[in-house]
Amino acid sequence: MIKKYFFISLMLLSLQPAFAQGPAADHPAMELTLEESIRYALEHSQDVKKAGYDEQIADQIIRETKSVGLPQVTASGGLDYFPALPTQILPGALAGQPGTDIPVQFGKDYNVKGTVQVNQLLFNKSYFVGLQAAKTTQELYQLRKTMVQEDLIYNIGAAYLQALQTKAQFNTIEANLERLAQLEKIMQLQYENDLVKKVDVNRIKVSRTNLQNQQQSLQTAFEQQKNILKFFMGMPLEQEISLQDAVIPLENVVPGTVDAATAATRKTQFQLLNTQKQLTNLQEKNLRAGYYPTLSAYGQYGYQTQRNELFDSSIPYFKSSVVGLQVSIPIFDGFKKNAQIRQSRLEQKKLTEDLDKFTANTATTLSNAVSQLQNSQDAIKAQEQNVHLAQEVYDTTNQLYKEALSPLTDLLESEVSLRESQTNLNNEVLKYKIAQLNYLQATGELNTLIK
Image 1 (cartoon, rainbow, N blue to C red):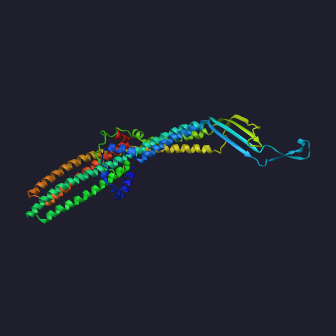
Image 2: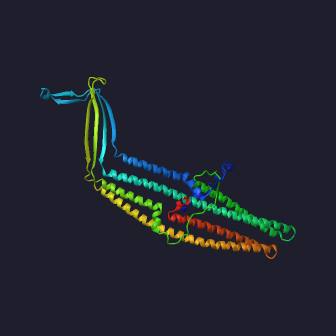
């Protein structure tokens, strides 16, 4: 899933020139929270719409399966014209002429007939198994739609959080730029009064230029990440959006409180595999049902006439009707169904292995998510302390520099250290939020982001 996210990210980054198209003024910025972004995506995503169409297809499959058990009515009619009637040879003995052959033509030039036939299935074990399979197929499509929605929620969450982290980093650079701009003004005045050297002023300008380049790169990255988010949401790229801080509702995580087996059964993919196993089991039942006889009833009613003149009413239409039962008993198929049944059993065993593997994988991802949450919490605390210390060092060095007790290089180094510590803190906060997202995915609770 994450690979899919980064693949699409790279694809959209390569299309950056197209993102600038369209006047932004025509599309006022839309303020979006994480929950609002997800809800918008669930309503407008093409993948979700396609999954919805699959659900409707499943409904029609059920109707199609049921139709086999309903009466099948057909009507037919025909008109036969014989320019030359077929001739039959009869023995002459029938006409008192033994030893000779007598050519005889039977029928009339025009034969007209019309019939209505009704067939009704009375017993077919495969039909009832097919109804069960159709309903299970409907459940399968519903689960697939849920999986599409969960994948979308995860991708929206990852894209949203990444954009927020870039925005926070941009704000950090902007605050540092303001400090450097103020320092540059002071340095320029000191230089004009011969209190500092020209090289000191240039050092400040170089640092400011480097920060401006970083800020420009972050601005570009932020716009690209918003476009990635809009792509996942199914939103027009020309629509401007404004992102709010994302708070993921997650209670304190205590290792061992969520059992891996329980977490696996909550996940849609586990339910999907289990449903596929049920379908394979029904397939085996359907194959076994092929050993049972099939019984159906039929009825036919019609009219027919034979005339030398098509509209000669002197010869009436004669009616005919028939009703009956038809039974089909399978006797020997060359072990075809036996081979198919064994294939079905093996497919069920494969799905059982998939379920066991999925449970084991869930245990791994859940353990990793909990571990990452704990590590990120500790790392955030450490980085917050580091930022506090870096701020103190910068403030102290700045004051010493103003009092001419510290060189400019120390001030610039303290500014870089402060910026790096702030960047590290932003990165750890992003890791923590991504870990929260991974935890919700591991426990099958991604839908809590919109509840």
